[in-house]
Amino acid sequence: MLKKTIVLASLTLLSSAAVHAEDLFDAEDAVKYRQSVYQIFSAQAGVIGGMIKGEIPFDAAEINKRATNIGKVAPMLGDTYFPATRDVKESKLKEAAWNNMADFQDKGKVFGKALGELITASSDPDFNIKSARKTAGALFKGCKGCHEDYRAK
Image (tube, rainbow, N blue to C red; front, side):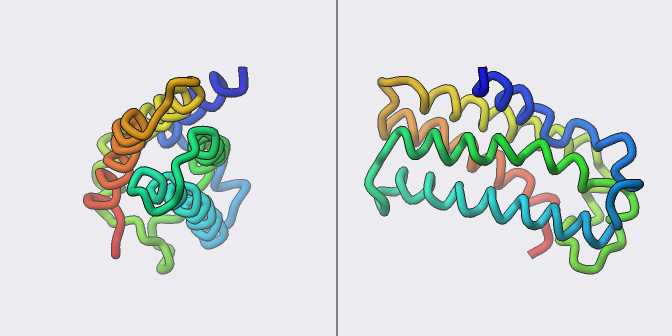
């Protein structure tokens, strides 16, 4: 049940911002919150990437744990994307994301779908390094799609 909930939640990653997020969070705090969530993504993805590259011993249960961790925090991002965050200096979100929010959200959905597929695949007893490379590769491709177009260096 938890996996289905995580998969569904991750599919809504950026599909809509919270209705009143700007009433709940100061813009600067929302950007810090957003960056903290992405730090969690990075730490978890680093373990997954290390395993599929052979830098860390492969462990299917560990990949599932790390992907599930990302799935648990991914829905929190919806609270952090609201217009007042657009002008926060510390934000690494390019202006292009605001100018093409539909594409930005679509890329979030691609990421969410890939994350859901990795969570599901990695819970299968037959999950192995070959299937990990395919499903984690799709996840990382989803990350890259947003980073290339919408994240400032």
